[in-house]
Length: 449
Ligand SMILES: *Cc1c(COP(=O)(O)O)cnc(C)c1O
Image 1 (cartoon, helix red, strand yellow):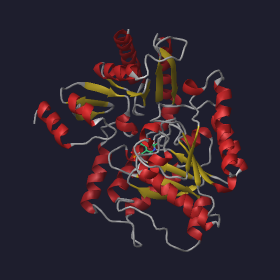
Image 2 (cartoon, helix red, strand yellow):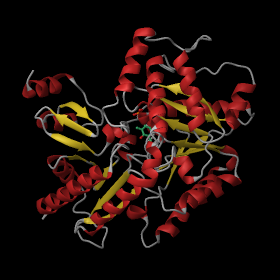
Image 3 (cartoon, rainbow, N blue to C red):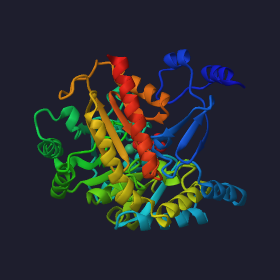
Image 4 (tube, rainbow, N blue to C red):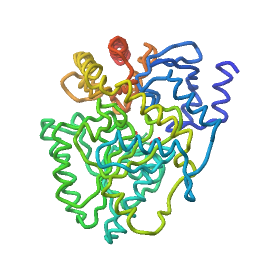
């Protein structure tokens, strides 16, 4: 099939995630056909630096044959076996071991799932089981944050705080949302430091309003990813820690994006010095080569759910899929043996921070922020104000298209441009990324004038 035929069949038969079907029918999809290192190429032969690591997952880029070969070998040896009914497989044990080593101290158990959404559903099940076994069944409410993303199953989407999603389904009724630590968007006249404290105090207020005896857990991404790479002010997490220390409430950190090196530490929890009770992972654990997710369970929780008898009535057919676990083993070993995360911390993260900050001088950029290997740009109409071009987020959509034209995949979340490139980028790649982003901003400014 040629490009037009592919696009026509796509239109006719494929329903895409998070897509306006009507709109896409008019436009046609971009057909991506191959990839190498940190680059992807479409059917027209247009090659782009992938500033989004696929969908936050290909942290090692696209050319790690060790991963694909390990999957292939595993598929030939034992393509599938489940981990129900007192059965197990060698790769699942080995990956569980490895994850216990690389995750924060005190997290030594894992429950595998097929995705991040499923893992957050698993978290809801574990939280409930934990409090039931502790004879505190009244602890039911989970607090989350507005504009959080925790996946797209009913559980995951209920935990998430995206208003557009909530309009299209019936959310679980035991989840409450508080303000997000988004200083640029919601900080008003407060300094970032003041606003970080304010946003953390919202958690305290909510707990008091609901009654601490009814609150089971607080869930948060270390940094909101899909919400627009919202890096909380430095005061935020320490203050959240203080709040949580006062109450007997579980902390769930959703590390689906920030796990496996994105901040320059293994996990966001390491970066912020937090001690989560549960930690969701997915995406980069297999470098995107095979679907896999899961939740790391702290000793505090594991001791309770393992100590008393009674079946935990939860699990998925593909929990601990052997080929997925093989992909995870090889990925984690590469990250560790090649010191890729240390390189982000010591070399490429600081270099991106320096080069990305130059974009803050651009006339349509209101803020440029980075941490490790993520970055965001806030597009504004008037420099010095936070006013956007319009309320339809036209500038973001234009900038995304201009970026692709210039050979860089950036994503638009409203009028916030975001990047999360592969962790294997070197400084020359970062120069290329920033130069292309600069050109995309110039083109956007022209188009919006
Ligand atoms: C992507 C994402 C999820 C959902 O993972 P899926 O594998 O798409 O189900 C959950 N939480 C966060 C923070 C994510 O970014």
